[in-house]
Length: 73
Image (tube, rainbow, N blue to C red; front, side):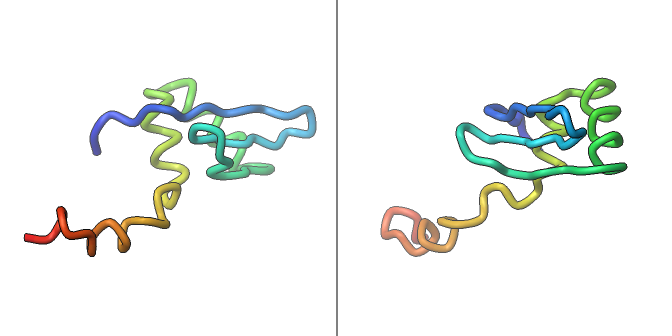
């Protein structure tokens, strides 16, 4: 995986962690998963951890872009 950028996370008072990519919500973590995420994000590269935990944050326009004339081989 290349360098991930543009991720940030917010830890809320109720223990919920919200991971954002740009201005969009990419994941919401609660309970033990939130605690596990916070451990990982403090011990490793935060941007790569957030990219790995969100996984599907890019789904949407890949199929449209694949059919665009400039992307055809």
